[in-house]
Length: 105
Image 1 (tube, rainbow, N blue to C red):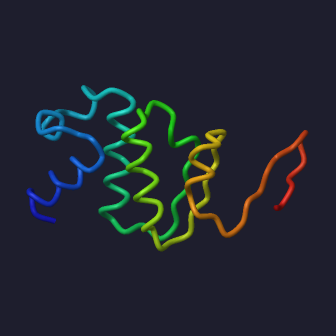
Image 2 (image 1 turned 120 degrees about the vertical axis):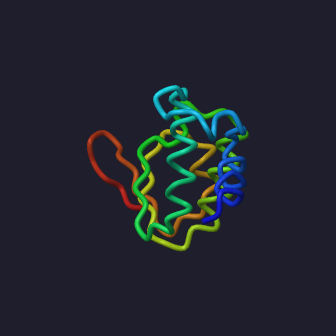
Image 3 (image 1 turned 45 degrees about the vertical axis):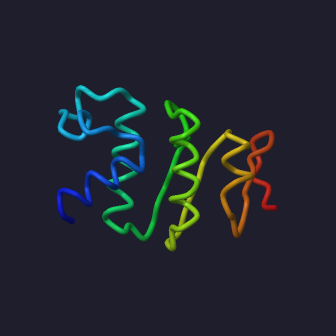
């Protein structure tokens, strides 16, 4: 990717120009999560495992994550308590843990 394409991708995940040039250790937990999501999208990963991906994200970042997941063509294993995210992400199969038992539905 060109530098301009990288900046555009990071901007889609809510990272501004000053954050693009910043060291990762200076980013907030939410900004780090956004950068990691952008990196996964850029690499074209085939299997994506997300464990509570909306933690530390604001609503615009969550909406961008939903859009990215909608266009994701690979396999997704999504673990989340975020009912809004689960309602907005297309799922082929849902597994729910209820009282220590896995329920497929």
